[in-house]
Every structure is written in structure tokens, then in C-alpha cells.
Image (cartoon, rainbow, N blue to C red; front, side):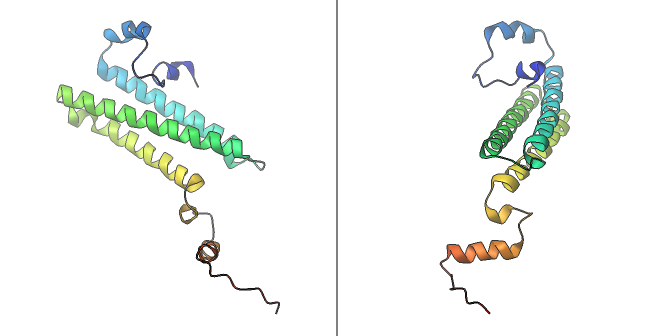
Length: 152
């Protein structure tokens, strides 16, 4: 993770005390915009990792897939928290119209991340690269509709 990114996105409940001075005199709207830019950059960097370790990896492992899923969850959690911070800011400052484009951008990226999560880790029916005939065959097996194979 880039160091600039980690100052905003941590798994802490509250910011570390040494970070409070960094924020107390910053314009909140500018801070949110900076955080949005950093989050989008982090998503882009992470997508490069996905491409290398999962999408174009002919030897993708269970570990790679778990990392992929964990990263997707973390990116979505961070994006959801950022959108909530924008909405909170908009409500407190009565600037809801001003924050709508940023929230819409976050929501668009969250949808892309969620679609990726479903495509790679969701149920078989959500896998767009699996032929429908295979999905149907798996469904029949799950329902117990198995017939002994007879050679022609």
C-alpha cells in the first residue's frame, strides 16, 4: 500500500492521536477530495496486482484467490466508509448537492468491485465465463438428476 494511502485508510476505530494535528486545520472538503483521489489510485494499483497475480496468472493458487477476495473486501469497505464520510459532510454543511458527484463516482467504483467479487468468488450462476450448459449440468447433479452413462 502506498504510504499516503495508509494515513487515511487503516483498520483503526479512531485516528491515531498523532494524526489529529494533521487534520485539525485542513478544510474537510479538500481532505475528502484528497482521500478520494488516494482511494481511486489505490484501486488502480490493486487492479494491477489482480491482473498479475490472478487474472493473467496461469498458476493461480488458493492463496492468490484469497488475497484477491480480501483486497476486494477491503477496497469496498474503504470506499463505503469514504462515501459515508462524504454524506456526513454534506449533511452537516448542507452541501448535499456538491458531494453527489463524488458519491456517485465512489458508488460506480464500488459496483465494479462488487461485480468483480461476484464474478470471481460468487456462486456459479454469477460466473459470466462459464457456459450455461455447464451451469445446467452442475444444477442437475446438485438436484440428484444423475443418469448412468451409456456408451453409444
